[in-house]
Length: 283
Ligand code: FES
Image 1 (cartoon, protein in one colour):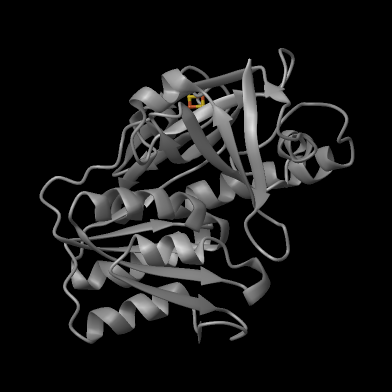
Image 2 (cartoon, rainbow, N blue to C red; image 1 turned 180 degrees about the vertical axis):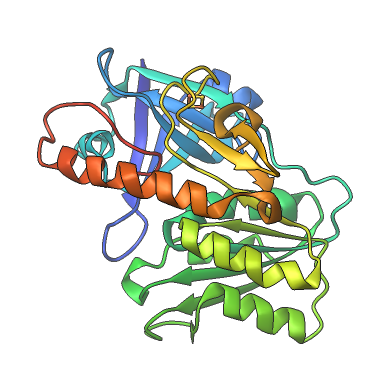
């Protein structure tokens, strides 16, 4: 069993929760960009979640959860002292950092919970990191202090202008590029449409752009095909080939259509919260 050590809301609205889990073997090996798969009990669905942080000495791993799916809503009801049945990982390939000198991480909404550990990992690796964090409004801003402490520059944008600058993240990124910022790489993580448009923003400038993708995952072992996507005309599986891919080569329209199909099923599932079935990463 894997005890919950602590739990806290990450924003005023309480839409994102942080859990610290006692999982020494995962904490010993994990790296930024990797994920774990948890189950609440032996009959539960497997839910993949990005590793947000870890403490090798304490043997703990931090995850951040937006409770929107059945299992994540049940997890929302669990408290420190409760324990998860399974907490398997680390899975997926770690973020590649070699040779990078200056990077911009663009996070959208709860995607910042995934962008933050990548930004932090790069910053601790000696890379200059600008981070553009976009949110709909002030009440759902997460991790501002943490992002500020682990980046060279942090730019917060909100769609409604209630905090930071009133603009979308890709517009802020383009402004920085036009002002002369030179990036070896742009790393994007957030809603699929936001990633598609951010990828289209960097393409004309020829800036290498990496997207962290979180399509529907079922077994997270490369066997079920649930997380398949097309990259440069080839079928890939996010759980074993990713989760990070060249954003300019991803077939965004295909993955957006697939996620929209399963989103309907998930909505239906929320009406039956007592049954642990179905679900997507981060919700
Ligand atoms: Fe089944 Fe990736 S989740 S192949």
